[in-house]
Image 1 (tube, one colour):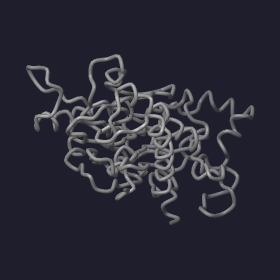
Image 2 (cartoon, rainbow, N blue to C red):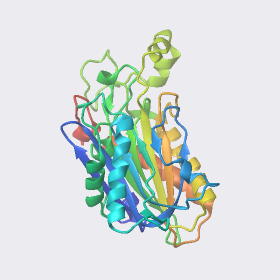
Image 3 (tube, one colour):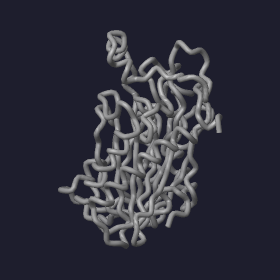
Image 4 (cartoon, rainbow, N blue to C red):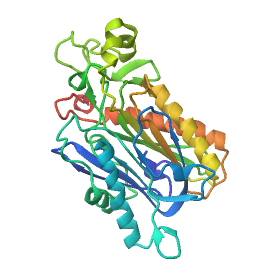
Length: 332
């Protein structure tokens, strides 16, 4: 049964954020202290990742102890070192005989064009995120890895909208809970799949200042890409976009099965972001199985896509205006 409507409803998952609110950057950690079976699916054309090769089903490592998501572009990969230090101090990690090595796969998004590009998530910030981690309801909006996130950037950062972190969970019967967390920094627009309408994205230059709830203020990325002008813009458009997702379930899944769940969960991105998985995005989805229940992998994957789609919608609905970009939370 859902308690928080967050990924923390899945037993064994803790979430913590740390950010610099002035620099508009941060990181988000998902702690799995007892270790969970993990898989990954990288579908964007411009990813920034660490330790994802370990998660391939043919490789040795079966369980991870944390997932770190961070802003700061490739510089933000340093945040994972803070999680490793936190876990090592508590005797958590893969036993090599000589030492326990925490397994902390990581992925980053590009937020250097919003806030202060000289300040990025580092080991200290990653450690602080671990100190802040809990099983409470996940804080959403412009926090953690979503502190500097934005969506709809075909016309440049000034015509984009603020986004951030979103989370959700679904009870799918027999005590099984599927949860998701998303840090949304997409090139494309965020779409409400119930009606196909744009919720947040590239703002039109023809309608004046953005006003939530007024006439359609969006230029529509896909429509722009059809035009000669839009195709010309693509040559100069930001190549610094990413949707980072984590889905989790309290089920006994093998490494191959949880990798399949990660693949299926990518459908949640395709349903809610238009366009998605472009060469300008680094879309990456991790999947975690904490064990305890028997479950059909296809069912888990189907609901993982639903949960991730819901988390993506919440990432914009819960984000306030920041960095000069309008956010939907201000209209609530």
